[in-house]
Length: 218
Image (cartoon, rainbow, N blue to C red; front, side, top):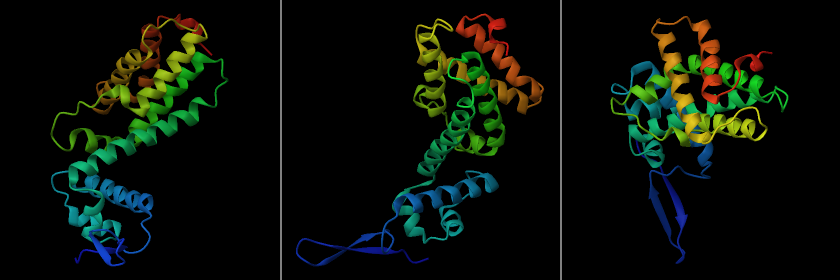
């Protein structure tokens, strides 16, 4: 396909062209969202290695030059998809946690776990692409993840209210995040019943928080 270009006005009144930029108004957010959605579909269907930039551009309905304007390679697309995975689960968690009363800290922990586990299973194909697809170590700082940040905020707020005692909410949230992800993975490979994961994680989270498990009963 022929690459698109956009015309920009220079101070001297002449036109300049930025290679790969779409014609007309940018609408960068909309274009990027469409490209990311297309990348998710192609990566999930074909795998990271087999997928091509040409296929992703075609799926999005853009010229390849448009894709390269926003993403230099597949690795950048995977990074964008990691952020998308994080955002989608975080939205599910926030929506569920906010249905609980503000002072129901143990109910909020349960809600966090339930939404996080459901989101993980619903988005498991996307998770496998962004974590395992590129076949390279994935060691991003989990403390910077929106999922972990939501849990850290819950832990910190509960500690301030006296529901539990935690010295370092972010570090505690990171350890709980890895327990959550590991528990979901164990269920996926069949070593644990899927339906048991939320309750097992709740038991573990309450012990990590140093709280009385019975106080968390609804």
